Amino acid sequence: MPMPPPKPTTEGPRDRQVFHEMGQLVRAVEANGPVLPEQLASLVGASYWERGRFDRALALTVGDGLLVPGPDGVLQAAP
Image (cartoon, rainbow, N blue to C red):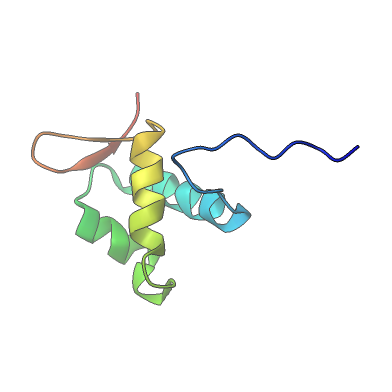
């Protein structure tokens, strides 16, 4: 008997690469302190990443509560 299909979600599947990218973002903020998203992109070399990968990784990292945006847009590591 075949396996039932997976349950639908609002989030697409996360590949192994996005977990690596999320880790890079968190480590960069932990090492450099609170930064603006533009500074974070520069710190991790996001200009060399595939188009849209930085924005996706950042959205997932913030959505998972690993990075917390401040009122002025500065990102900091979750306490």
